[in-house]
Amino acid sequence: MPKREKTLIRLDKIDRHILEALQKNGELTNQELADKVGLSPSPCLRRVRAMEEAGIILGRVTILDHKKLGLSLTAIILIGMDRHTPERFAAFEKQVADYPEVQECYLITGQDADYMLKVVVPDMDHYHEFLLNRITRIQGVSGVHSSFVLRRVLDSTALPLGYLS
Image (spheres, rainbow, N blue to C red):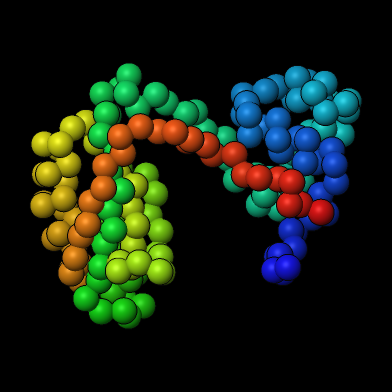
């Protein structure tokens, strides 16, 4: 069995319930959250703040409907780099971090690519412009392979908390 990194604070069953509830609905008030996990508001708030301070809870976001906003095309892009140096990778990562279209960026292994990006744009014309005028212009990009999402079968931000001990 692989070793797991220890969390900064010890998480018990109630902490896991708090995290599960917040992953489902980050807009819960402290009172609603306390009711869901069977605590009074003060201890519940202390636990949430402790997990925030430990860096376990990084923030809360609002999830938007991409299609209703006219962002109908999602592309997965595999990118090869010409040199595998820390400087080349750092420059690439800094550049793609500035592009709001890039939703996710992973340094990967096991493919004929170095990076995998998830990109969201309105349509193919915008994708074409993004690819040719931004991605391929980043110094060091030597190859690009694009795949397009036909349907989002599962799209979750929730982490599997059953592994926590």
